[in-house]
Structure formats: C-alpha cells, structure tokens
Amino acid sequence: MNEELFTKMHRAGCSAIMFGIESGSNKIIKKMNKNFVIEEAERVLSVSKNSGIKNGVHIMVGFPGEEESDFFKTVSFLQRARPSIDFISNVNDVHAVCNSDLVVNKEKYNIVMPSSKSYEWFTQEGLFPNVRQKRVLDMCIEVERLGFPKPQNNLYENKDQLFDIWELKRFIGEDINRFLFLASRFWQYFKKNGFSRVLFNKIRDYLRFIYWLYNKTNYNFNKRCQE
Image (tube, rainbow, N blue to C red; front, side, top):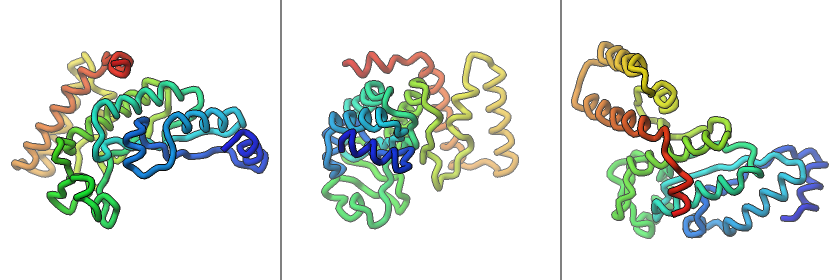
C-alpha cells in the first residue's frame, strides 16, 4: 500500500481506516497468521496519516505464546507510531470463542479450556486469565498515558462484575474518602445479593486490582520497554 493509493482513497471520501494490527511483536503477529511485519505496519500508518486519513488501531493482548517481552514490544510500537495513530479503538483480551481456530486447534496452541466460558482458557506455560487481564489493564493505562481517548475493552464482557475498571482507576488515590466510596459500593452489593464464597473470591480479586492500580500510578513503562 503506497501513498498514491491512500491519496486516491482520501479523495474518494475515505476519512478513516481501522487497522487490526493487534500486536507489536512479529512473533505474535506470525502466530496470528497475519501476513505483515510490524515495521511494514508502521510505514503504512505513516503513509495513510500523511494522506489525510485518520488511523485507528485494534490491540489484542494475551494471544497464546505471548510473553511479557512481546507485550512490551506492543507498548513500544504504540509509542513509536503515536504520531501516525489517531485513536485506539479497543484493547481486548483474547477470547477462545466457539469454533474459532483457538478452540478447534487448541492442541496446536497448547491451551486448556476448563469450561465453556471463552475467557477462562489458559496455557501450560502460565498464560492464565488473571495474567491476560492484568496486561489489558497495563495496556489501557499506557494508551491513556499516550494521550489517546479511552479505548473499549472486553474485560467485563459476559462477566458479573462489581465495578468498571476505569471507575476504580479514577477513584483510587491518596484520599481515604475514595476508599470509603468503594467500601460503600461493596456494602450496597452485599445488601442486594447477600454474601457467599463466590462473592468473597470476587472481593479478594478486586482488592488485588485496587492494590495493583494504586501502585501503577507512577509506573515507568519506558524503562521496561527499553530492557
């Protein structure tokens, strides 16, 4: 795809293009059976932007085989390509949807499906749901730090959750009143739904999220990306 083509598209009325780049790691891009390399994607984004077209990008984290280094390659890609990207449409965890390649060929991807829920799969190498969800949150925070509008995510798709993660991020801070606010939300949920072991586990997971988000405020992504 060259500048001449994008210029013709823009003149014909094309104002924006969504690019399903998904990852900044060539290893993961290849595993996804995508026929490009990240260097070529960066070039195409630049040419498209210079032609007057707005560029949107889809990001997907937690694909089977993704390691932490692959995740930070995606962060680095967004930092490098920031001038050519207008918005990040969504940052999604990989769901193993029924009849998808991940499910049909789960032995190939070395994934285990403990239930019919598309988000509960994991790999023998340790790519568990909580690991992938944390990476989604990391990526969402980095996207916001880079000045992009808030992206959509699928963390709570078909899941019974107490809070939206962005609500947590917005309220977590040094002010104790923010913690009291969250406590009141838990109490309201108790009164409505009662208490159970499932709810206890849910609260435990959310407290972990709260602690993690609180300590992510001054996290230095750039240092990790350069390692």
